Length: 151
Length: 149
Image (cartoon, rainbow over all chains, first blue to last red; front, side, top):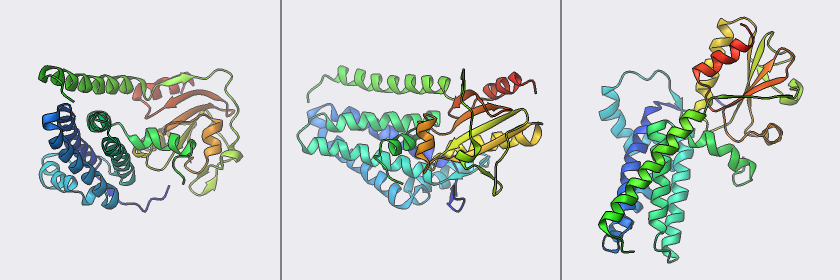
């Protein structure tokens, strides 16, 4: 493992995941009814853009990362240890993929596409923020082994 | 879709509950050790493990924590820190970390799906147990206890 990658406060990505989990839970609720499905679509589009931002620029340059540094970290004790910035970025990529599948299903005429994808994103982001579940630890090797990701 | 307001609220609650249960189950299961009976012999040359730039040629005198890590794994770093600390403060414990991101042959051979995964080896390099995920404090104490350290 190369040690040259940037280090971040591990609580930053968990804070971002908490925001995401609330937004996608609202998305899920709104997507279940025809009268609010357009709203769900817009909210999920915002979540998609936020994931894309995280994938392209990393958590440190993400608006949630900025919110964390500005408002949350000053109230917390100093981080016991910093972590590699790449695992949370991998999680953003997984989120982007799942959200994209939701839109693809919706455009293909699957009415519940957004609701299903929002529920899936909620599971992952909630586990990440509440239980410190690390998608990269659990999924990366498995995806490599079945050949979906190449090194 | 047109679903009653009450049903929609219930569906939201079900999703939250499912996530909560999944999290609790995962937390209770991860980091525990499983006994390996008839554990295979680890071949250090095959692992290609290095420590401080030097190839590892011997196992720990009492036990070895063989940790498999990968890229994109935040918990691998924390786990390595715990084992390194043990290694420094206890006699006969060796920690070896192998990055298997590009060693899928090893991942397949040892059936590793998540990282970190730790194999606990006895003095002769035989696998005695296996820990998936970040080892719990009690798990490590138990493992060390088995070797009477």
